[in-house]
Length: 111
Image: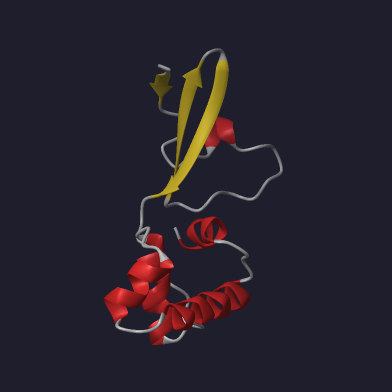
C-alpha cells in the first residue's frame, strides 16, 4: 500500500489542522499528513524527549522505560534480576498512578 506524504502548512502542527476555537497545540507537536487510497491521515508526534512523570518510583520509571522499548514482562524481569510477578505488580502500580489500562495506553501517555 503506497501513499503520498506531505507536510502541513504550519510547521508547528497548527494552522490548517487546528479547529476554530481550540487551544493551540504544544510547540513540540509535529503533524504529518499522509494520503492513502483517497483517505487523508494525520499523524502526530512529539519532537522533544518526554520524561516519565515524577510520581513513579525509580524502579517503576525503569520498568516503564523498558516497557516502552517493547520488552515483555519476562524480558524485563530477566534484565532487572527480579521475578516476573514483581514486574507485573510494578506495571499495575504504573498503570494505576498514570490512569492507563494497557501497554498501548502507557506508550501513548509517555511517548
